[in-house]
Length: 200
Image (cartoon, rainbow, N blue to C red):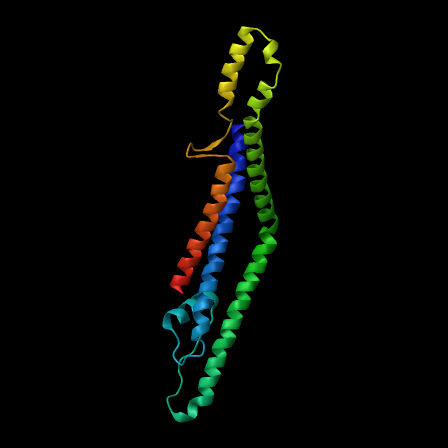
């Protein structure tokens, strides 16, 4: 049993870590494109951005624009070349996302399905355990002897504490925890979104 539990743990967590790494990679590439787009019509290229684009995709933005007045066509060609490079960069990102989806779409579907199933089954277990005391109280206890009623009271007192699992004794898995998890996920999402917008 322990062997299978360890194997299941590895099978569920390794794809998650891989998926998170790929998502972070795509996010970083989108941030680079986000930086490049507003600067593509400027005359001087951003040296850091130029280096990142060259390192990641081998894209080059040339800055050797002549300073004389007859160089307007050359300047416009350079600006247009930057637009083309940004378009190529975006196409590479979309290609990467398409490849990622083709490789991981089934795995991600299984992960979401199993996570949802685990949460639902845990909630059902908690609800079933909460209703045990009502089922026990519904028995024909008034017609029983004192020994039965005394034992039933002890049993009912014990059943007031529902059966539930905990996450390393920190969180009890219950309906309330599920709602807190949803609220916390949305709060983290809005926090990360605000941090992203501040960095832009």
